[in-house]
Length: 196
Image (cartoon, rainbow, N blue to C red):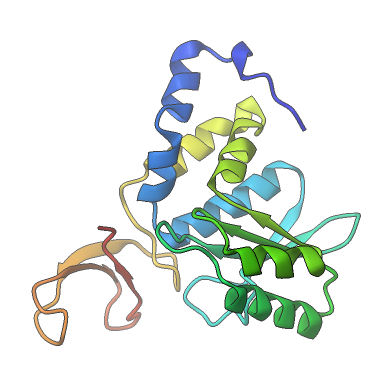
């Protein structure tokens, strides 16, 4: 799939692609899952989200297509490389689910052992450059939605999708530190850590 972004107005094209790497790193893990979901939906696939705040058993997304189902594990890691342990967990989930195809997506990269194990078991591994390429190749009429997602300053609860509010811990080991808490607290106690 190849999109010629040169046809887009320069001003709009630059606003989406300008500092794309920084925008990807500034979103949280939940927004990252939503972005990956949208990128596969933009290719015409149905996507089932299993991740979020619930235990996902090593599978965040399942992409349904005519060629067969594909499981995806997303790690919005900006400083750590994915290691062999995470790939093994994905392989275990692959066997347990009976899904033949698997993709691992992270921003950082992979250790040599993780790359070797992925290659041995046909796990596709994608990094930040691959995600940026997927964004660039998304149909021009859908790129405004990506732009909105990457520039969104408000947060949505990964458990119930309600608005998150910025709070400061008043007790415990994180006293004085800020975090995003669900606006429906105490009904929903989901939190997101503030990105450094």
